[in-house]
Length: 229
Image (cartoon, rainbow, N blue to C red):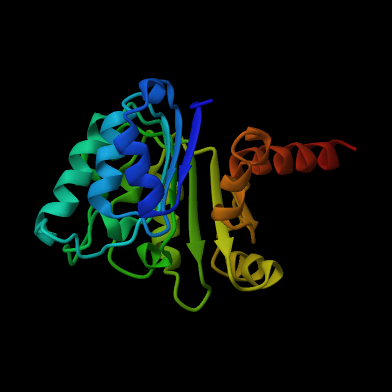
C-alpha cells in the first residue's frame, strides 16, 4: 500500500512523519507538493529512502524557526541520498537563493535519467547546465515561443548524447509551437509537443501507463507505423 505516496498538504505531511510508517522504506514513487513545507518534505524523503521516482513540487517559503538559508541545504542533502532515476521538480525550491542556478552543481542531477522541470524560465536565457547532463534519456520542459531561447534547446539536443525523448510542454497552441520549432531548425524526431499537465499525470500514479514518458513512447510508435504504411 506504500508503493506510491502523494502528499499535498502540511497536515498530510506531518501526519505521515509522525506515524513513522514501518513500510516507508517500501515507497518507490513519491509526490510532494501543495502546502507542504520544505523541511517537512525533506523529513519525508529521509524516511522514504528507497524512492527512485520523485515529484518535488513544493514552493519556496518561510519555515518558521528554521532559517530560510538552511532550507535548500536540507532539501539537497535529502535528495542526494535518494537512489533517484526519475525526478519532476519545481527548481526554485532548491535554488531559491541562487541568481544563476547550475544543475550539475548538485550531485543528484548527474544520476537521474528522467528529468522534468516545471518552470519555463530555465529556457529563457542563461544556461542552467541541463545540456551538461549527458546521462539523461528523457527530458520534459515548458516552452513559450516568444520567451524560450532556441539556442538552449539546440545545446540540449546536441550535447545530451543519450537523449531519446524531449517533451516540450506548451501553453501556446501545439501547431504554433511546432511551426516555431521548424522555423528555428528544431524539427527533431526526439521532440514531442504536448499540452499535458504534469500534475494530472500524477493523479493516476497507480497506472504508470498514464505517465508522460509513456505518452511519448506511444506517439513514437504511431509515427513509426505511419511512416511504414
